[in-house]
Image 1 (tube, rainbow, N blue to C red):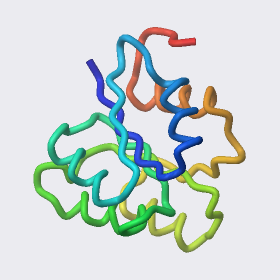
Image 2 (cartoon, rainbow, N blue to C red; image 1 turned 180 degrees about the vertical axis):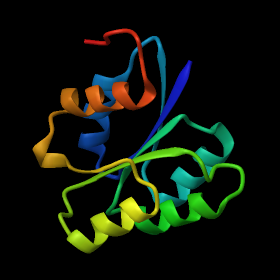
Image 3 (cartoon, rainbow, N blue to C red; image 1 turned 90 degrees about the horizontal axis):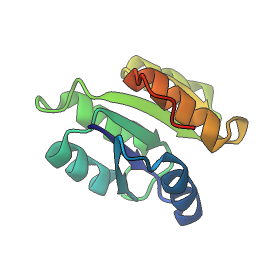
Length: 127
């Protein structure tokens, strides 16, 4: 079973993503800070991290840098998403190996889930 870690500090958004992404064939892990996200990533070794940029206790870029420096989880797939539409932040995320940098308001949870499906190469349709 594939594992998805969602690192998102806004409770309403987290609940929305958890409701949409929770499926039998996908284990969903959640964190509401960079610090908690790193600890869960290190312990659980998710197949993909959906990473918000603006977080308490360090931002998503800091967390991505920390992940890339950690021998155990450095190759973890990461998809960054945020409402922070800043070109230098996007560039840094991509340089650090983020698969993409999505602007949350441009995507519905369903669209984000389809992107996650493609990244994880699921054969099943979860809709």
